[in-house]
Image (cartoon, rainbow, N blue to C red; front, side, top):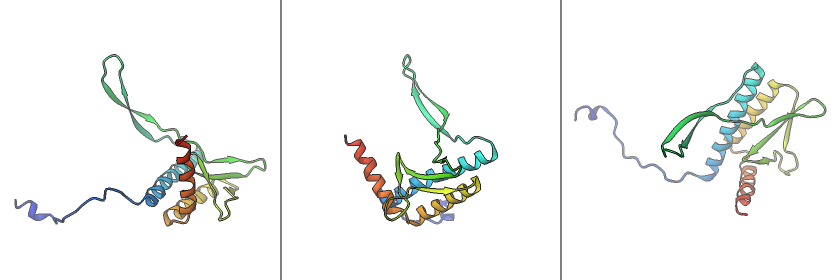
Length: 148
């Protein structure tokens, strides 16, 4: 037992449920991180496709096997008629409004570098809790679609 005496032992209990606001922030922050990586990859002329694990069952033998497949990530930006880049922020399939009135849902930038900086700024705003109200509205709308 002398080896255990070398560690700092504490009484710990893991929380079962985390705050839903924090969960939503973390979910959106992770998606914005993917968008930043995608934008940087496009700027450098390469592709960004993180791998995920998929489990499939062989219908004949009934055996399960796991395979790595690339995760498809859609861009949250497009080029408008004026040649500018419009960036929208999505929570699930719902677009988040970025102003207090709920009328403006896109950020217009000129270059790919500005796009990356805008994504980083949005990620910071999400982590700071500035978009909690908009995330909650989008979450409610998203859940309503599953009830039908």
